[in-house]
Length: 585
Image (cartoon, rainbow, N blue to C red; front, side, top):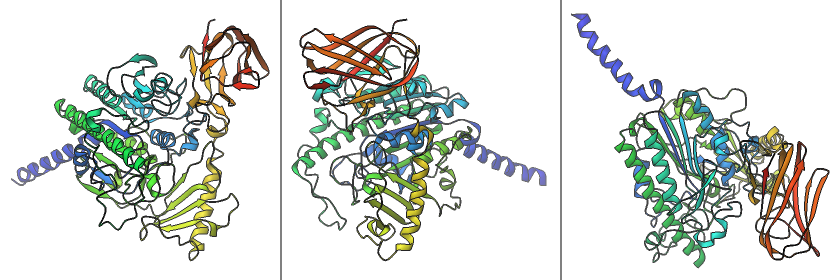
């Protein structure tokens, strides 16, 4: 009798353990990461915005674990490299959003590659921004399926298939499907969501990782008219009269930009609703972990929850973002105040999905599962490093270190004493309004010492010193198109004609046909130059008003070099808009 009494209780306990631990311990849960582009902390209804309509994400947040102090990098490519690798971006070779600094080293191990240990099917849809050429494309970094635009954004100079469409670049775009150009009908966010759902349906029987990286609401601010109509009459600066938090003044342009951003965000919200319904229809929602986050603060001035700064700033408004994780075994509507960051996503997924964390490199992040499970953690000594300047980090210029409740911010010279820094106690001053460095120099000095140590370690990273090179002549990509997003040389290469630029490449020996595309047609009787190390090729251009110059049957020996093209006519040296290089033998 005693055995009979105990057995049902034991069986019940075992069944409960199986139910609660099934997804985590027995199965490999599906993973969906949804990340938006330049959507700030305040661009959601649930974070206090009275204007933007995001009912789906708001409801999703209440069904999720919410990390209320979640941080990213101040700009997009660094955030994405840290998300993908669990490492500070400088370790991965990513140091900028263009200027040749948004190419992640191919020796980095991504979430997609890590999940391959458990035979996950992997797909990316939208913005990659970690390299447009072999060996840094999504297909080279663990993704089975990829549908992306190039460079940092559609309509930008690096995205050669949408740039010339101007104010229609987000509509009916030519995108890159598994590294091949393919035309699509419709609005970009709709396309990326539809293709992500197609991937999910095709892989519903096996574990999958879907990375849905909307390029909206990044500029150019283009949105279907029916969404804009929802916001055209609002005043985005209104509704805060009784709010004592600090808010920035908004110009009329700021207000119009906000209307368009809110329209783009509502479109995203609708698409996320369709995706969540798809999971329910396929009966896989319970075994699917879903993350929603954004990549940095807002680019334009608008509501950001009272925080100081926006995209590009190391202040809270530039680096604090919403972060929600929904999974069937997680407690719903749970808020966690412990500081967390983009570098924590990979180690969290390693533990949740029962795959091995990379052990041959430094992983800067920590698994968030102990926090989610309510365990006590000793993270008091944890610090987070932030920086943002063009090209490479500039010591103490827009640089910060947060540890516990204190945050040290440098907006000063490389040799500045600690009194020239800003120190904030974020527990008592969450909006970074009161600099307390003068009365807390000992705390500031300790933080500055750690900031120095972190900076000195990161800038000597192997992948930063030996910047990733684009491989030319490989069977994996031929021809290769070199775009302006990945061009180094002068700072701020964009759409200028007269500017010095180059690409860091590795060339395989062989003969090549080369096309140089210019933004505007060039005059005849100039000379086209191509420099690679000590080898200089040059030819007279006899075509009048042409935007394409070709060099045929050019021989290169095997080399690592800076590839430097320019067209000289009169006193002008004109840099090509893009260069196509095709190996012919």
